[in-house]
Image (cartoon, rainbow, N blue to C red; front, side, top):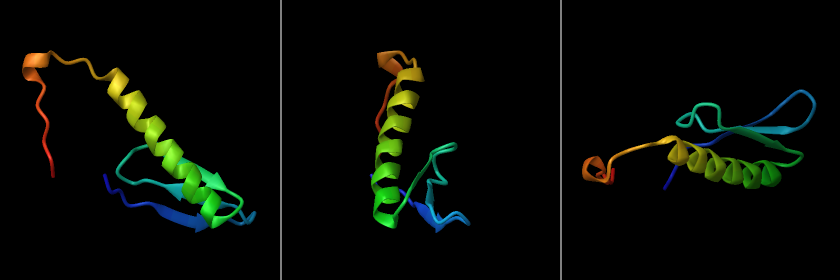
Length: 66
């Protein structure tokens, strides 16, 4: 899966990462590389939480590749 990530340095010097396609998916790090590693972990967590909230009947479940 490929997602766009925005990483910007804030006024305190930290790097803040955001995934626009995943509402509320943010992270940060002291370096650009740390922020990138942290946002990857945040994405995994975000997807796990959203999947656990999804209740669907197997007969209605389909997989779509875009």
